[in-house]
Image 1 (cartoon, one colour):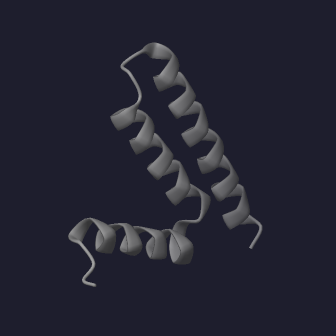
Image 2: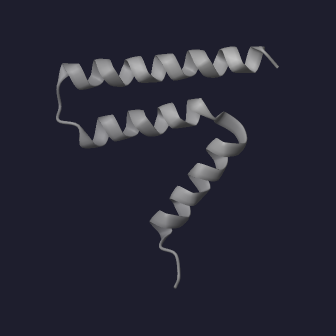
Length: 66
């Protein structure tokens, strides 16, 4: 069975996140999901921004610790 372009892109994204970005990559995916699938409203954007901010902070701290 041949993989669809969407499946290949998702596999590449997961591999990229696993190797390079970790939580930052997860934050990007969550933010995209919130932006695309959530109803347009202020609460969703605040939650998305909070998730991204927290994940970026954790990723930055993990990078500093070595």
